[in-house]
Length: 141
Image: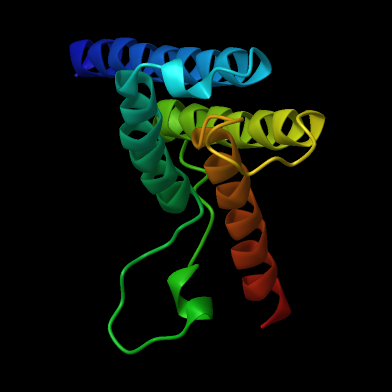
């Protein structure tokens, strides 16, 4: 069991490292006004690992796929299980990455033109807005 935790932690660190590196490079290419020269692999890393991290965030928030229920039923409970530490750390690091993307997009004057900014920066920023709106909807209900 311990080997599983170690391997999971190593793989999670690799994924988070790749995700942060790809975001960093997207920012660099955008600041240099050369987003078109950003390798497609970096954008793919952001999309694929970001999707996995979004799923992890959903599981940390207790989002469950349910039949015929409302959004309130989808958010059952926030996980406080200490054995889920790696998952919780990944969720927090994902949220931090979304916030960094939003800040960088603001520093780049909210440009939404793929010729001037890597698409992943606005995409991640909009994802953060969606996460916040989803959380507020649950609170409001």
